[in-house]
Image (cartoon, rainbow over all chains, first blue to last red; front, side, top):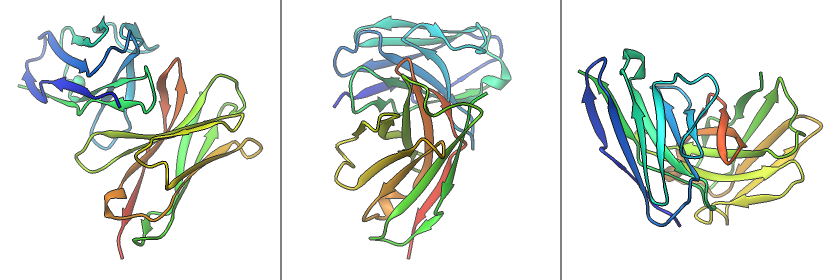
Length: 107
Length: 118
């Protein structure tokens, strides 16, 4: 099975900051990497698919990059509503697997 | 806009069977190319993919649960279901159904909490 490792596990940033979350796969997954945002008590929401494609309706301050084993989610101009936990997920092969999550807080 | 809604048993006794259904509204479960998935999340934990089914009936299950899981689909009722046998406390979680598209999960249900307890 492919293991997904995110870092950091938590971070605190200020409104207006640029935030970067990384995700590493235990083997190459090409660009089959998705990012989700989960707010407390809510279902995850798809932000980025295929490593860098922005899901419809998602603000353009969210972006993704990477291929192979190393991927990045970037949030530019951090907003208060971005407080959430972020998960990466590989869809290269079954069983699909998720990272452990990054908990983002606002300073 | 397609919406998914989970329903089913909220409390299940150890060793018994968990049964959940995901209703699909505002769209067709018969649309080709989509997978219909179950995913769970234990309290304070990450996400675990359970398995998927296609409209054709083809399924794939996470090997970690394969011996206990069945996912079925009822296209006439526009719903799909999860059955998990021989549950233990480790199966206590929020269970989500989700549509698979472009190899991502683009639409999710709100989730339903299942507690395994005697």
